[in-house]
Amino acid sequence: MAKLEILEIPDPRLRTVAKPVEAFDDELQRLIEDMTETMYSADGIGLAATQVNVHKRLLILDVSEAQDTPRVYINPEILESEGTETCEEGCLSVPGIYAEVSRAERIRISAQNADGGFFEEDLDGMHAVCLQHEMDHLQGKLFVDYLSPLKQRMVTKKLEKQRKVAVQKTSKALL
Ligand code: GNR
Ligand code: NI
Image (cartoon, rainbow, N blue to C red; front, side, top):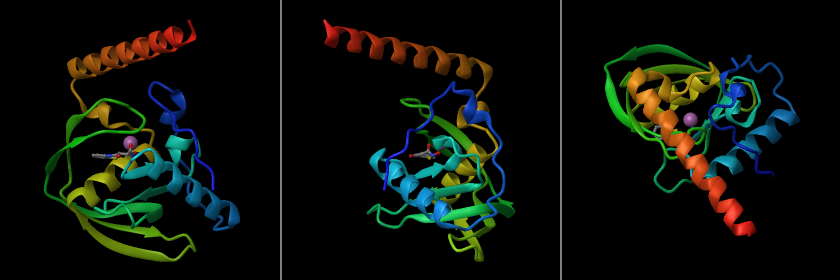
């Protein structure tokens, strides 16, 4: 297994639209293992292939309390959605930023598993929020895109400041 690098905003590769997975081969199984390791070591509850610079329609998530139930969704589609729910979201590709986003409360999805088998599932709560967040990544969309222009400017400023502090810390450590 290998830990993969997670792309961070404003990396333009995060804006890539992913293509359907066609081959359910060893390479795909390796990618799923590596993404799972990457998600757990980053303390995330989900990870889309886009975030590790693989532009295929594949995502993993683990919304379990014990972080011991990784789930794989390949070529996911939302069949039905209802209700609206607002949840504070964060993203491994937008470090240190948290903001409220409204999404469908309940969704019915279809997807394929690691062997290519089709399944359908009804999701709600954090499971539904996270799946919609990850499916957005596969379309090159980030949760901050839903914020008002004013809030987006505040996010950009905060990210620039965080980066400056990180650079200062690195140069201090070198002195
Ligand atoms: O770890 C994550 N937590 C989270 C919290 C609220 C809503 C969505 C998420 S997903 C995020 C991991 C991530 O960036 N996945 O793309
Ligand atoms: Ni994310």
